Length: 121
Image (cartoon, rainbow, N blue to C red; front, side):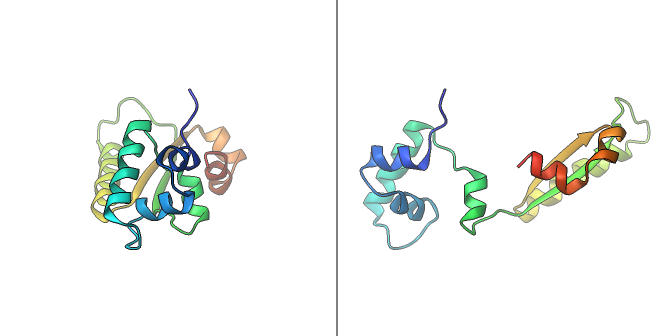
């Protein structure tokens, strides 16, 4: 199934890509009628914005990532779970995204954190 693009939404709504973008980002120069129509099309097509494209447009969301290795199924102290869930809750409270990158020690030694993030976009 093909991912719906902003171009698809614009075509279906009969407006420009810029108008769709401005409507979805809350700009005030889009009429309420047009915004409502675009939101209906977004819903119908099940459109989700491309986060990579958003960051290119200067609308990047704050993302906090934790890189860890060798997660074990049991951790009697509960430290790892407590740390991860605490970070997740704090990110939610601050309105940013939390990403957990789990890998093994060998891969972590071969690739830097930045390289891992770039591979995951």
